[in-house]
Image (cartoon, rainbow, N blue to C red; front, side, top):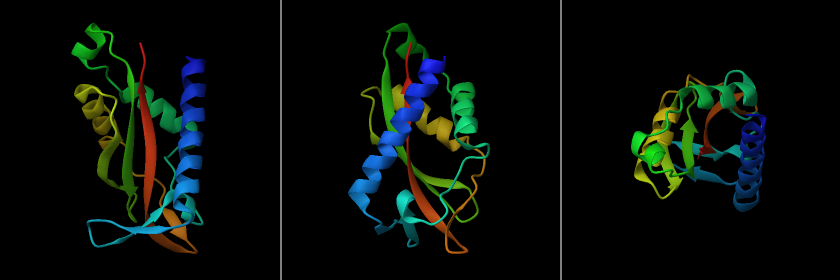
Length: 140
C-alpha cells in the first residue's frame, strides 16, 4: 500500500514538473471565456482539502476498479486535467492521456467529479481559475 502511495506521489510531482517546464508561467484561455492560470503560474496553488495525503486517501477510497478491466487484468494510468474554479468547484474535467481502456478513463473522470471543493488558487489576493493535471493509476 505504501509503495502505491509513494509511486502516486512521485508521479504527481513528475507531472507537475513537466507541466511547469512546458508552460513557463503561461496563462491559457478556457472554452468558458474565462482566464485560466496554469498550476505553476499562481502565487497560491489550489489544494485538495487535507493536502496530498487527503487527495491520495480520497482517490483510494473512491476509485472502483471497473469489473471487465479487473476480470481481464487490465491496468493503466489515466492523466486527467481539470480546472479549480474561484469557488473551489472542479469543472472542465478531461482525459489528456488515456490508459488505453475506456472504462478506466471513465472511472478516473468519475473519481475527479466526486471530489469536494478545493482550496482555491490565488494570484496576489485574487482568487483565480487554475488548471490542474492529475494521474489516476489502476493497478492490480
